[in-house]
Amino acid sequence: MTEWWKEIEAPIEPYFDEILPGHDCCKDYEIPKRPLSVRPYRTVLGPRDSLRLWAKGFHLHCDPGCLMWRISSGAGSLSEEFGEETVYYSPAYNEGCEGNATVDLLCGGIVISHAYIATNTFTPQDRPAYLKLFAGPRFYLFVTGKDVLDTRLEKAPKSGLEVTWLERYIGKSYLCDGTFYGEYLLMTITKRWLYDREAKKWYITEDPRTFTTEIVNDKTPFGWTYEPGKAQTVDIRSDRMKKAGCCARALLPED
Image 1 (cartoon, helix red, strand yellow):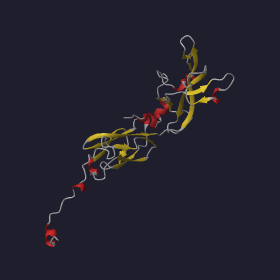
Image 2: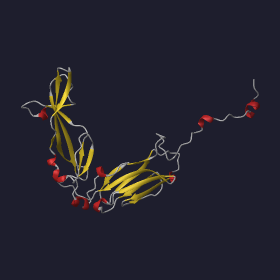
Image 3: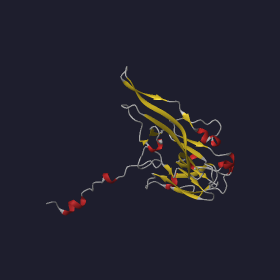
Image 4: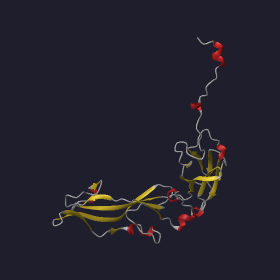
């Protein structure tokens, strides 16, 4: 039996498994390979409005003083210059959208992320501010004497039947504040599967494309052309709308 005084004098083994590993305070604690990011990333506000910004992924054991906030372009102000979060205050006016702000997040004096904030001072009216054009079309089975909108398909038909279908490219328009305004048919392509008996294989024929952009010609900036198969956001604001502060979130830059 071991004497009790020998147990007291025995050295205490350190618990190395309780030592926490280090963490880069400029990196996201959940995804250490990525830097911290600002949330929300892209936002539209009204005049004299406010928005809380915070550093997503900031580690609880890090010193908030290592983070710095600044407005690198545009107007407005911040409640805090240092810390894990701040509040952005939008300007009262934003003529030409020149006051749209870029808020930088710095860690250790280096810019690691941004937030983009639009201040919209334009009251929504009956004229949209931008179009969203989709890369892929909607598919409709072509049936003679029947409204093609009643025969929508999930995807283009496969070979095996001599069938004709329509591929309709759609654009959706929105007001300055992001409210949905309307839908436009930009182009229609008619396609058909046919069978080549000599080559013993199916092939697709394509009729000339039918462009219907006259629907939006009066709202399309000079030089803009529609590219099917490419997702696009198109600015269709008039000079009057821009001057009045029609500043949409969808038209903000992205990293």
